[in-house]
Image (cartoon, rainbow, N blue to C red; front, side, top):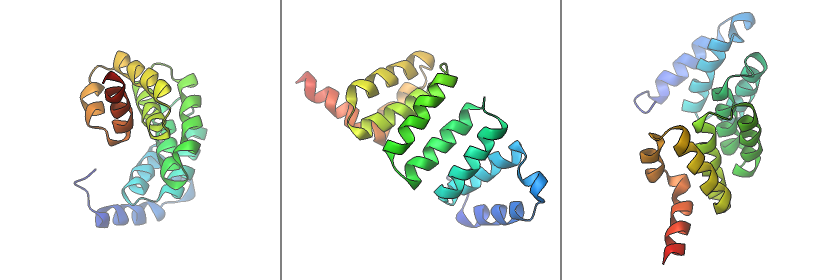
Length: 150
């Protein structure tokens, strides 16, 4: 998403705004709206759109992730955490949920839970380990583990 500028997001948002209300609420259109709102950092709108998408596609893990991401920015990590915990109940094999939950818990200083959840993410998708090492949200977790070793 980094290669798309603010102007492109704005234009896309304006085009979507001109659609009829029936089309505007189609799941595929809602997914596009979420990406645009994320690019424009319209966290409150993104929260509402992700919740609407969940109403159409409750089995869609990415809708839960988008809702938690927007909630984290619009409100707080504390408010986003229960969204991810609920999502994991519904999608226990989606590594992204465990990864994002570990990020929240790391930011909250709940290192035992963060460690448990990042390990689960690694089991489900070994490829996320490289990303996790450079993840700013996990830095407190890594530092806590390093401190305990010495």
